[in-house]
Length: 248
Image 1: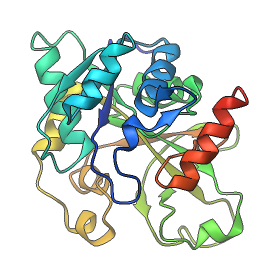
Image 2: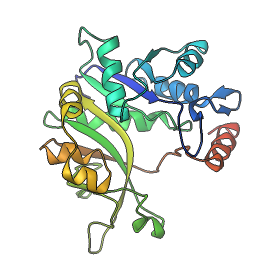
Image 3: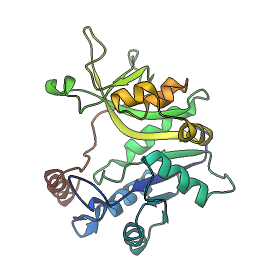
Image 4: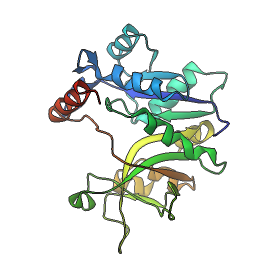
C-alpha cells in the first residue's frame, strides 16, 4: 500500500440543469450528499470533507456529523473547488494526496474509492482514475460515454491512460473501457493541474483530464467491475432511492 497520507474531498454545488439542488435531494430520509459522505468514510483511507459551494450543503453535512468547507461558488470545475478546499483546511500540507469523489454517487461502493487510490502507490503516477469494461454495445458509440484508451496486460487491473475520448477508441478487436470520473491526485500534481491553461484537445473533446495528458502528466487507470450510478436526472434519483431502500 502507498505511504501517501490521503484526504477525500467531495465537491458539491446546488445549481444543476437537469436536477436542481440535487446534493440535497432526499434519499430514504437523508440528503444525497450525506449518503456520499458516509460511503466515503466507509472507504477507510482518510478523513472526508465536503467542498461545498453553498451554505445549505455545508449545513446539511454538518447536521449529520460530517465536515464541510465553503468554497467559491463560481469555480469552473470540481478540481478547482477541491484545490481551494484543500488549501483552506490543510495549510500545513499534512495531506500529500487527494481523492476527489463526485457528490452525485449515493450508491457508491466504498471499495471503488480504495481502488482509485491504489495506482498512486507507483511513484511515477501523478493522477489515478477508474475504468470499467463496456458491456452494453450501444455505449461503445455513445459520445456521452467517455472512453479511456489504455492497454491492460493479462491479469493486470492497472494500466496507463494514453487518451480519453468521446469517440469509439481504440479500433480493432478487443475491449473498450468506460471512464469513471473519480480521481486521486498527488498534492503537487493537483496544484500543477489547476494552474494549467485549458488544453487544445480538452476544449475539443470537452474532457478536463486531457489537460493533464497534454502537459505530460501521467494518469493511471484502475479497472473495476461496474460503473457506479451517477444521479443526473429525476429517473436516476428514483433508481438510487430504490437501490438504497433495498440495501445496496
